[in-house]
Length: 235
Image (cartoon, rainbow, N blue to C red; front, side, top):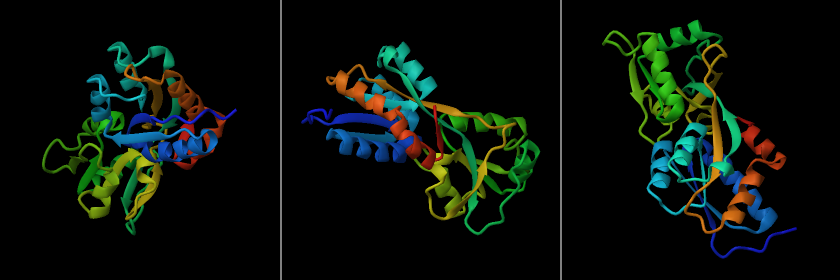
């Protein structure tokens, strides 16, 4: 049954990692239900802050640990949380550059040590990578590669494409559609870190049932192909 159209669009806030995926899925949802959905994407820290400060959104899509913090602060309904996708970290170099080996942790470390500068992002993947680099001694002194964090909402791939860094690490979904870079592949299993992105209903919503229906669609089998197409796995 097709729901009656809503005159007030549902408002979704998300991190950049799921921006393009959500754009595709809400368009599919509009075609199926005639419901209008607006998605605002930004750095995950900024998105969580907006929800925490009570900005009026209906649904939030963020890393699962951020959703848990928002639930603890009573800014989202903890019972509404649904895990949507699992997302891994990938490696990229500038288009045309020689592709480094990344088959295991030792190979990735060699690729990083051979770089002049290394890029990473904010958010959960960035936190993990910074600890990994520190464990390798990277960035400790001037003899080591320079470690550059992309500003919130700025793709690491843009730093790679511009030549500011020689190698970059970020969620595959944020690298795979950028021009000017070559995605080498996902980090090997021995150093991979997978982020789960989840959806939840915001406490500010005035359209709880419609928000719940959207989340059901985002987690449904109908969304699986889009998730795979954006470098993620259904959760």
